[in-house]
Image (cartoon, rainbow, N blue to C red):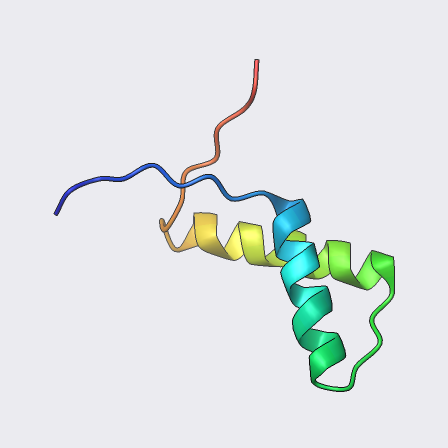
Length: 56
């Protein structure tokens, strides 16, 4: 299988969750969205779906 580069940003994850939760009738706080984004990012790393890279 070919490797491809994907950039995943926790801000994008938070925006996605915000949009989807609002659409489903929930009103999440900014802190809740940030926590969900961090948890999702950690999950993707734990499952080896993504590798974390640090900007220099």
